[in-house]
Image 1 (cartoon, rainbow, N blue to C red):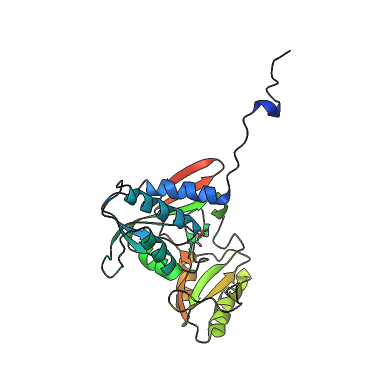
Image 2: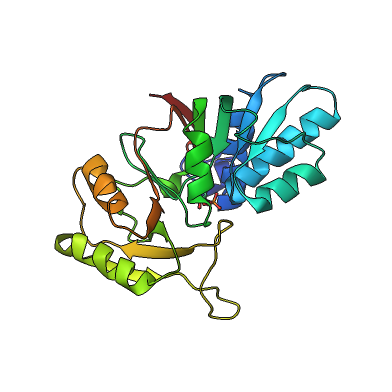
Length: 252
Ligand code: 5RP
């Protein structure tokens, strides 16, 4: 018979497996659909945000967006955005932003975030805290059950002065969660990684959930020497996730 067997793999369409970077791009492009002409925009940092900035630059060059003002969250993003001729400003001039778009390292079920594995958490938190709307763009690998749940770093920006003392205090603070604090180093030369603000980053590795995130964040901020931590609690207003299932948009 020339009938095809419906269960045969030959009869189903080939499966499209997207790379993580393609998923990041899908989430980023979806977020840019929320950008309107005349907006003051927070421009995030990292490989996901980079796609959004490329897209904004492209739409501006085509005249499909006009009168955008970008507020970059890092020197790297500043460089990328200026190379795309996106007009730029800062928080001193524009203390209220319409929208920010940025990636994240972890997103918990309440849309709380871990950010800063790219090292820009301080400027990101300053800028994204001033936005009417903050869209977080991730691929599905960033979704976790709780903050720290990926087993990867919870970054904390600290002053270089006696950083070991500060790191030890942080490690003791989260002893019950099995915390290990490590100074971030550059893989190229093994030297301490230095942020755009001239500080160091101590990465906290947690084995368990740290419980009340606000309380934990406040405790960290009381350690003299801590500049800012990478937990973004209750800041995201919209989450865009791209995965093999497609793309979803969730509002808080
Ligand atoms: C930088 C960040 C980034 O948003 C975060 O690290 C996600 O990066 P990527 O989009 O490259 O996965 O917080 O400080």
